Image (cartoon, rainbow, N blue to C red):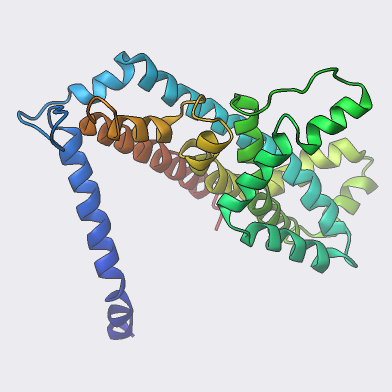
Length: 279
């Protein structure tokens, strides 16, 4: 049995080695001195990490990435919770709805973002609807704003959020709600004291699938933010492709910081689930 496990691990080893070598190389570049003409320079220094918080553009990109990621994740979970709860109670159309959600999820990420950019355009369907309803007299400028980025992050992460929460809801026995109702709990009390606590493992899983990718998003701020909404990924791109010379050490430092943020989120949630004995 152990020999079989060892044989199965052989194809994984090159991928693990490639990942480790890549991370070590990025760490090495992040500790080197900035040189516009070369990838790295000597002597080694840690000032690149301090410059993240002393450089206004880099610091703002970190803060903006975190709070936009948190906002979009919270919206995804709130909307996904309601939709998944409704789907779990609709046995007849559950398969059809799940198939539609899966088909949306499988569409290319870039295609979805371009489609959303058409919807949010000044002459797009959303603005036409707002003008026709009389809610606004002039087209609303969505593109190039943080609102457009949040909409894009929610739009791309919502399908997986719904599927994860739906899987969690199907593990909750229906008689739990019935028992709470028999003891006089109303709908909101059943939601707060029964449904929500039992859904926490699914919610935490949604955070893992939604928050780190939202913080590290690149296509959404570039296409919907028009490059005006600077996030960590776009700052890495700008630092590594500057017109007057690339600052590769700063870009590498931001990459390592992004890796630590994503890894910290995942480890914190794993620790929380382990403390609650969630398998």
